[in-house]
Length: 195
Image 1 (cartoon, rainbow, N blue to C red):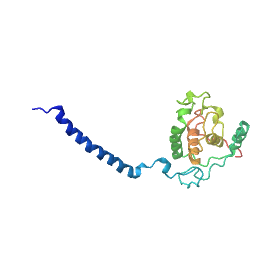
Image 2 (image 1 turned 90 degrees about the horizontal axis):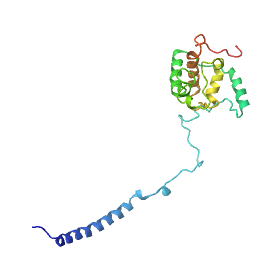
Image 3 (image 1 turned 180 degrees about the horizontal axis):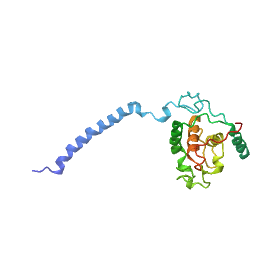
Image 4 (image 1 turned 180 degrees about the vertical axis):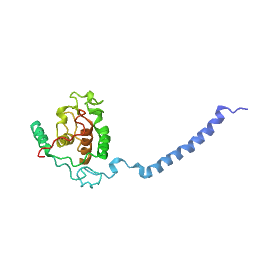
């Protein structure tokens, strides 16, 4: 025996009549919980409302850079010339060169390439090619001038003063000085002015 359509309808109607008040009751209960707050009701910090706490891992770690920040092309050349007086405080030990190689691979190689020829995958896309670290012009610069360029950037090269600590930049210089250049010059430090 099968029931007719008219016999099933009253059962469905009574189930629906009981379900609607139950669902409406759940909705009322749901609105009573704290998740009904929107972003306007949340506490917010306004810009410059209070001084941000200094974090030991924040930048600058040691009070920032002390090298001058030139704003003109002529000022950049003058500052780079003056940087010849900066001496590399990190000896080119095997540990320093290894650290410099690691840092070079993650920060410099994309533009300058694995052999320092300016043929890295990103360097090939730039309108102005990165310098060849093996050229006499680059090799003849003092460590302080390399440090200046890494710190302040040049042409299409971004500055790395925030990406590499002062010590890390010297390690990179030790690696480049001992790795790139003509075979008879590799490993030779540049002459420092005033020696």
